[in-house]
Image: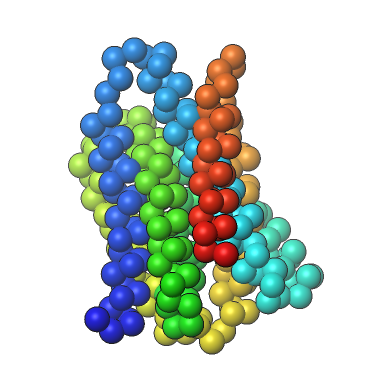
Length: 237
């Protein structure tokens, strides 16, 4: 298998964790409503923790190590402002897609990095694949429940959308493989801009949604999600 085909395969595997998480959310059934609500909040918090780990351990470092300070900080803030505007537009339209947006802001830049790494660091790329898959699974679960609970789209259609989103991964990996392997500055700019957007969405939408007064498991879920990212980063490192 050639390196380009390998990049497409790895990114597709990572992306398919998104609809797989949606399938698990669709078949999940806990009869006790209070337990189910707490479980779902814990999954949402776990995804938020995983997103924060991606920001702290992958997206920001990739930008900070190759960009000047002013540009890196400016792009981080610009990412937050940009997605604050997107979030406001979604709220005005009567829908909330914060989890989906955050998931894509995590997955797509990482898929570009995956493609770029296959040119120079194939072993690291394989470990990044595993980390991406484990992050996408709970994020896909929580994002599916967020959309499905609104009652505006049937479950089958949501899953089809998630399969299409997974298909964006190979396109981003191909772009990273072809254009960003020798251009770390552009890749760093993309990742740190995405990091700003994720930080906004986590603290504006995801963390408040995961909170439940008197319950401790959701917050511990966020710690577990971040711990997953730390473990993946230490293995890659």
